[in-house]
Image 1 (tube, rainbow, N blue to C red):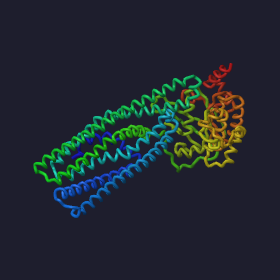
Image 2 (image 1 turned 45 degrees about the vertical axis):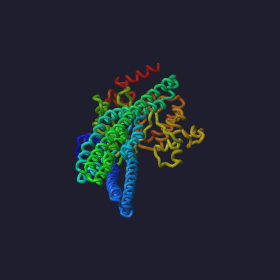
Image 3 (image 1 turned 120 degrees about the vertical axis):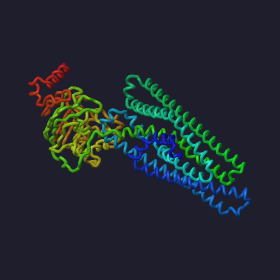
Image 4 (image 1 turned 90 degrees about the horizontal axis):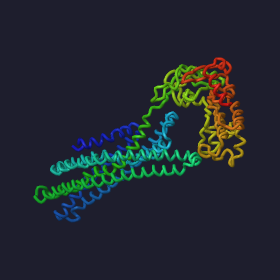
Length: 592
């Protein structure tokens, strides 16, 4: 049987991995695929009925000499079969396209949600442009894959089997000829398609690289202009675009070659069946009606296989994109799922780190090891250490961008990893050294901390952060567009908007990556005053880079090579002459 043919099985095995992933990840695939296949099979049944009726009409009119009266009922049935077939084909196309739209929407939502779950720990190691291309263009390429190629894979097996089963009792010789010639199309599809698929993967990689590089160029345009590299970068983008164009043309050549070869082989196979029927008809070994019926059904027998070859190019494009999509979806999230049964910590928070450790994936050296530290409620702790000592990793663990491999974090005695991430982050406000501002208005960026806040609450947060004055100078006030990444604001203004967010969130735990370390004295003074107001009645952890910040802290924690070297106050740590004293000495020498 055709469905047991090893060539067909080989084709199925080449796409089965992607298909299994689709069926697991996107449930609507099953419904859309099932509807399209059922309608396609019903369309094949209507086609058989149409050809049977047509052969009977031709036989009665030309050989039987009957007129319109004798064939009226057959003609009406024939018209009905044609209308039914057309309707089923239309419904199949509608079902497949609507299913593809649902699949794309669901898969894009899952991909975006998973990227959000993976968090900054994952995205920092990827190119933003490539991820954007995968989420937009990659998912879009699944349209033809899901809407046409996948249903056609099933129909290329079921429809020929159905026609073969009908022809076999009518004319066994023709059925055997069809069965013998059918594998030629899948064989050629595999031979040509294996080369085309490699080129298709290369084309998708080139598109991803081009998207990622183009985004890098746009984001780094000021730097390119300053260093006079814009012309050279323009030439580089042109080379990358030319590489993508050449790869696309190669893929298209393979697609056109594949289509020509498959059409040629299918035509030869139909011709072989037609010649055999003609010879047997002349010899009188087969009546006209069954011979004509087989001749009409022969092209329909090969049609699904030919259409599979036509849609294979779309299938390879979709498969290349799907491989990358499912690679991302299979990446395990760095966070454990929490439980809503635990009591949510409230009020001022005491944070305890108990023998906490973390190793980044692919690394053998711990980023943090055996960290035991307490952040008492209502106090400010300064976290210091050389670059690479683990300060950023500790902040990421506190913010639950990552979960520790060993040990645990407690908030008022409640294990943080046992809480849902969203619930824990309600207790935390983060003021980074370089805050990210989104394209939109000043008000929208402040409300990022609490979308449900009223305008009056957002304006009060802005007043506490000391940003009222510069907002009033903007053309539209709070409704002024600040551009992508806040490009229309100065560094100090962007920092104060980030502080306004923290005021609006009003969280009991505040983490700051010393947001005044790279500002002018006036901006530093204004932001320092805002931070003093923000730090009142909160548990604060400051990643400190300068001594004036360290002096003001209640406690100082010193990290060295991923371990907690010492904890204490400034004067006491200096007397120990340990790692902290060395850091202070280096800092003072840089000021001389």
